Image (cartoon, rainbow, N blue to C red; front, side, top):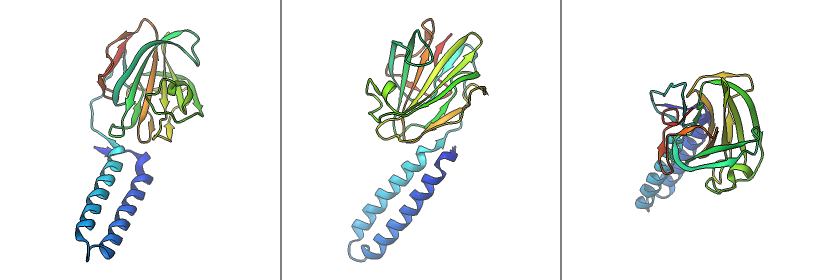
Length: 218
């Protein structure tokens, strides 16, 4: 396991705060209230561990399958429905949404290998990620990948806690399947918009693994 470069600043700040808080509590509380000191030590250690875990990159063997659309992130499948596309496409599409909790790996990955033909950031709200309107009203970053005559759109969507979306792609990029698309700090959700004839391989409630789980075949 390695740590993602997006976590460098956050981890440094977390370590400094951990050391400062425990130095001060040891100096001023330990002599008279050792139990409080140990309690705060455990709490801050847990918080530090969580911050570090937010930026972990597990060692994985990623799925490479030209016929498959793989999960763009870790998390739970919370939406599978036919929708009217609200950007880039003008037709109806199948939307598959994956909710990322704060405990999930937060790296976002390319669902397919192909060319990036659309890349757009949208300012917006910070509704909770499972809100029905978060897909269209929240801050988000959209990409469209073209694979031959097929296209798939992804949306990195911010939530109530996730206030920073990072996207590494540009129009014209040729990308590999399961390569890094971006990062959403502290979780949220990623949507996929697929053609109506896509063969969906997951169901609501399934736990997806980014870059590995096959969401659909086309």
